[in-house]
Image (cartoon, rainbow over all chains, first blue to last red; front, top):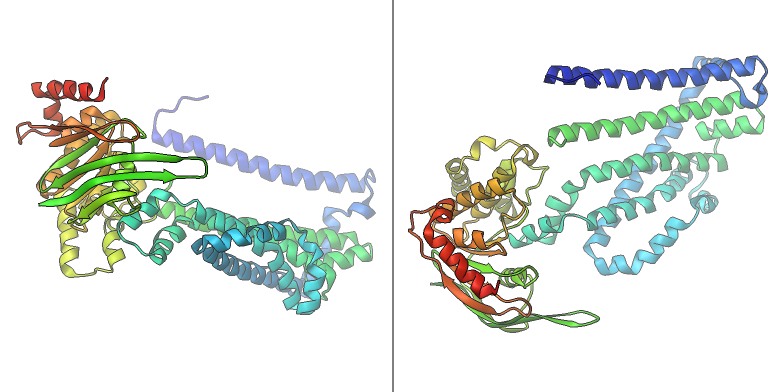
Amino acid sequence: MKKINSVKEYKKQIKKEKIKIHTIQISLGILFLLAWEILTRANIVNSFLLSSPLKVFSLFVTYLNSGEIFSHIYISTLETLLGLIISLFGGILIATLLYLSPSASRVLDPYLVLLNALPKSAIAPILIIWLGTGLKGIVGVSVSFVMIITIINVLNYFNHVDSDLITMMKSMKASKLQILMKVVFPSNIMNILSTIKVCIGLSWVGVIVGEYLSSKRGLGYLVMYGGQVFKLDLVMMGIFILAILALIMYSVIALIEKILKKKYKLN
Amino acid sequence: MELISFKNVSKTFYNLVQETKVLDDISFAIHDDEIVCLLGPSGCGKSTILNLINELIEPTKGNITRNAKLGYMFQKDCLMNWRNIYKNVTIGLEIKKDKSKESLEYVENLMKKYQIYEFKSFYPSELSGGLRQRVSLIRTLVLQPDLLLLDEPFSKLDFQTRLMVQNDVYNIIKNEKKSALMVTHDIDEAIALSSRILVLSSRPTRIKEEIKIQFDSKLSPSERRKDPLFSYYYNQICKALEI
């Protein structure tokens, strides 16, 4: 290890480290794709079952040129975002009500645990029947995946707010609502953001499950259709696009986190 | 004038397994312009007394009369790290929905007088422990209390910072002509700051002895520590605590 003698050198060191990590990360990805391509071309692995990066890419270009891909991306993203937003607002609202009423929270606790433990995909068909096969049904499935865990997580965060802060507010004669608005909510912004990060993935799962069950458009539909007709290029392309979309959403939240941390001078 | 008085107050806590008698027949009063210290071993019910004063709990027996506006200062500074210093200091006014010009001017003057105005747009994480504790005291003073309740306010600070903050808090209390009731298990701290010490027994807590502390009024807490009288009081308290 080189000795560090100034802030400038320290910053340089950190930057170097960062570049190193990024380089390795990117090369790892490229290496994976390259190996995949080579192995399928050399017929070491079955290219029918595994497709290949170039095949997937050329299929993507076709879909891009026809413009068809955009309607699939649009509908799935819309469903995911709707599911996410409805679950978050609903979840935080319910968590708030339960926080304000500990007795209700105790009464409902086993039901929450039950609903959380239940495999949500089992109730997806019912939701589709109730809400219809279109956007509503799929968003409903997504909400069923995300809402319960949001309630449980957020309620847990609310119940673990620094009790000294609450005593301080009470000693200043703050009302319950004031404690909620001035301490409980703002002290949990970061926690809620990290809950959103988890929920993004879950919301996508819900949407894909919904689309598997009934849909004519969307990335879940593409993957499902591709599987049924053994077009594994299509399946792989759908999965790639899903991964990238989920990553973009995740990054947006990570960026907000970073901005807030900088604002409050944390770390 | 009596700001607070306890008359034969007892407090018993109940849970599923047992009842715990924490306070047993406690009587005392706090008057204008004095700093009274409740000194006793940990777990002896000092915080229970503060909670009783602050009406967070009810006494099992006895009477408590309050003729004072109370201000609380805690072990932790309890600053909210998502609010800047100014917004932390004015939280009390925000709770009261007090936006009057006089109050805001009072805040500004206090902040200027005790040199935290220059940090008003800083966030708590940028301040040192000592400064944070000062901000926490100013936040309490903004509501213009007559009696400050100090709950081991220095115990989370390292020794040097503690000496500095003790001087700080003492000066501010004297300057603003406030009374204070401080709770601590630190004998040095009690002698350095207070004008009267109530020595408490372990549970169930009674007042064992009342000791008047009389130093030259010009002495700061750290100067008191160097005064010959200091060790005299120290011995007296040790005797009362049976150490």
